[in-house]
Image (cartoon, rainbow, N blue to C red):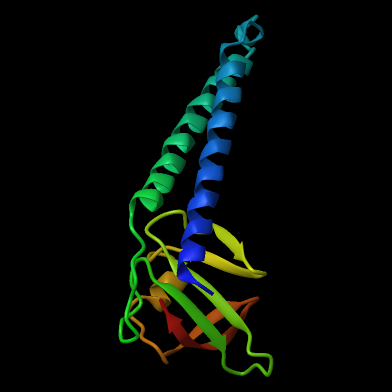
Length: 163
C-alpha cells in the first residue's frame, strides 16, 4: 500500500465530509429562518430547536474545514525504516497468531480520528495520538509487538511497516 494513495484518499474523504457538513448547515439554517419556524405560542419550540441545530451544524462545518485544510496544506511526511511511530505515520500491523497473515492499517493523524478510508480493498483507520490505539502505537518501532483489543479479546500484532 502506497502512503501517497492513502494520504490522497484521506484528503478527499475529508473534503467530502466538509462539503456534506456545509450542505447540512445550509439546510438547518433554512429551517431555522423559515417563516413557518416562528413560534405560535410559548410552547412552540420548533424555531428555537432549529436555531440550535443550525448553530451546531455551523460549528461542525468549521471543524470539518479545519481538518480538511490541515491535510490539504501539510506536505506528505515520510519516515525512514528506523523511525518510531509518530504523528503522520502510516503503520501496518500483521497478526502474529494467524495463518492468513491478517493485516491492520492505521494512519496516525492530528485530527479526524475514527475516519476510515478504503484503498484497494483494505481499510485504513485514522487514529489520533490520544486514542487507545494511538497511545499503544506511538513511539513503537519496526518489529515491536503490540496487543490490540478486538471484540473483547487481546490480539497480538507485529509492526511490519512504518511509512
